[in-house]
Image 1 (cartoon, rainbow, N blue to C red):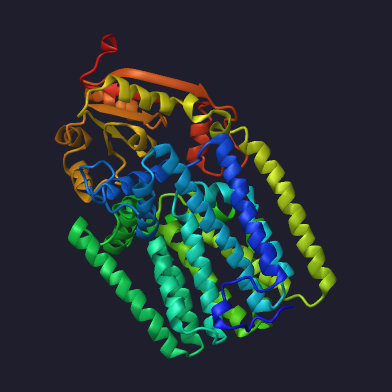
Image 2 (image 1 turned 45 degrees about the horizontal axis):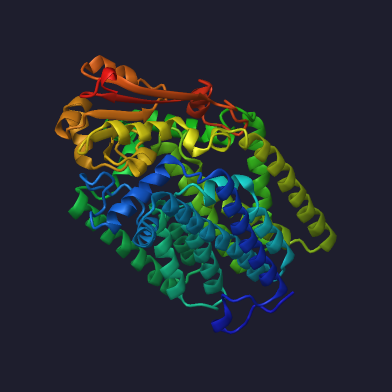
Length: 536
C-alpha cells in the first residue's frame, strides 16, 4: 500500500510504482491506438465529422456553422471548441482528422489513469486499480466507442473521471469544492446530460447534510445551465441544441399526449425501451436479466453497507447518474439500442469503477487475485472475439480510397461547378471533404428554422429555399431515393457500391443497424437537378 495523503502540489504526479505502471499503460494504449489508425486510417463515425467541419468553420471565422450558411448549436461545446485550435495549426483535412483522433485518444487514456487513481484513493489498494486501468485501456470495444469515433466521448470520460476523483477527495476533506465544481461544469459542457451526475453529487451531499458544499456546487451548476440556455435562446432561437430536439421528438410527442389526454403511450414506450435494453433486444431472456439485476443490486447494497463514506459517495453519484440517463433516453428517445453506443460509455466506466472498488474491498488477498486474473482472462478472450469480428467489418477491409462515399465525394468535386450547394442527410464525411457547400438534411447540425420549414412546407420547399441542386448520401434503404424520384426533376448521376465483407456483426444489438447490414452492400448515390448522365 502507499500513502495517499501527500502534499497538494503532487496530487496529479506519479507517486508510487502503481502510478508509474498505470501511466505507462496509458501511454502504451495511446501508441497502440495510433498504430491501428496508421494502419487502417481514421475510424470516425459520420457525426464525428460534424465536429471537425464546425471546428474548421470556427477557425476560419465563419462562426458555429456546418455548411457556412446556417448557424447551428447541434454540438456539445467543450469538445467543439477544444478542436478549433487543431484547424488553426493544421490546414490539411486528413491530417486534422488524425490529430483530432489522437487528441480524443489522449483524453481516453488519461481517463484510464484516473480510474486507477479513484480506486486506489478510496481503497488504498493498488492492484485492483491497476487491473481496472488495464481492463479499460485495452478493451478494444472501448477503443472503438471512446477513443477513435471523433465524438465528445474522450473528453467527457476525462472530465467525468476527474469529477468523481475530486468528489471522493472532497468527502475526505482533501480538497475544497472549487476543483470539484470546475470539473463538474466541464463535464456538463462536455455533454449536457451530465447534469445527471450533478444531481447524484448534490443528492449525496444533501443526505449527509453537507449543505455548504451542496450550495457551492449546485449554484454554479444552475448558473451554467441558465447561461447556456440563455445563449442558445438568444443566438439560435431555442433553449437547447437542435440535435437533442430532433432526437427526443418522439418522446416529447408522447409526453405531450399524456399531459393533454392521459394517454399512457409515454410510459409504455419507456418501459419497452428499458426491457429491450436489459435483454439486449431479446437476446437475453427477461427472467434471467431480472435475476441478474436483483443479484447485482443485492451485492451493491451489501457493499455499500460495509463501505467507507468516500465509497458511498462515489457509488451514490454514479448510480443516480446511470438511473437518470437510462430513464431519460428510454422515455424520450425512439430506441435506446438504436442510438449511438457512445452515450453509454460513462455508464460503462461507472460500472467498471463499482466492480473494481468491490474487488478492492474484499479482505482476502487470494480471492482478490483470482477475481482480478479472471477478469484479465475474460478481457483477453473478449478482445480476441471482438477483433476477429471487427476486422472483417467495412471500415477495416476497405481503405478510405476504395469506399463508395470517397468515390462519391471525388465525383462531386470533379463534375459540379463552384457554387453548387449539396444536400445530404448523413452529411458529416461528405461535408468535411467536399469542396462545395453541403447542407445537413437530417437537421442535427442545421437549425430550428429548418425544422419549422419541414413541418409547415416540407423538404421540397426547403431544397428550393436553400438552392440545393444536388443530393448525395449513403443509401440506408429508408426511402430517400424513392422520395427524390417521386418529387420529379431529380436525376441519378452517380452510384457506387461495395459488398459488406461481414454483413451482420455478432455485436450488433440495434434492429435498424442489423436491418441495414443485412442488405449486404454499401451504396452511395448522387442525384442532381442540373447535371444529366450524358454531361459526365
